[in-house]
Amino acid sequence: LLQKFLAETFTVSTKIDMHLRKPGSQAGLIVMGLDYACIRILQQDDNYYLEYAICIGAEDNKEEISTEKVLINQKQIFLQVKIDKEAICHFKYSFSGNDFIEIGKAFKAREGKWIGAKVGLYCLASNDSEKQNYVDVDWFRITK
Image 1 (cartoon, rainbow, N blue to C red):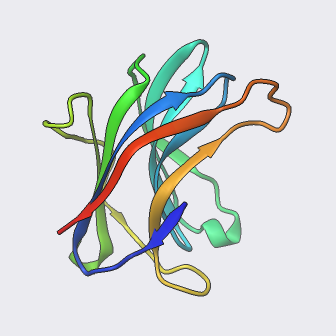
Image 2 (image 1 turned 180 degrees about the vertical axis):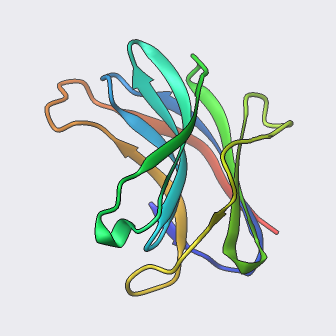
């Protein structure tokens, strides 16, 4: 679920509850274009982890790199990305919704193939999963 960048500077915040039931499943907040970066929750070994990942050169099938990973072991979390001038993105998370912690290095968004950069939510699981994965999105806000 993606939204095209709608201003030079803005902030996207969301409160989500994870229901990831198979190892390797993930859900998160992503900035997508020819390159991408995301802050996501992973389900691994019966634990939940928060991870920051980035892919420079996604259009050329370059490898995604995970730069930070934190054990969180909770299903509810607040995710945020602040877009500054020149499309510089700062990803953050919070357990309370009040104090956000920055994760990963700043990322410069690039346009996509047909339109500009986009921001949004995603949820992934392997095709062989018998258990359904989903995310409850309490809210998704775009502010100045």
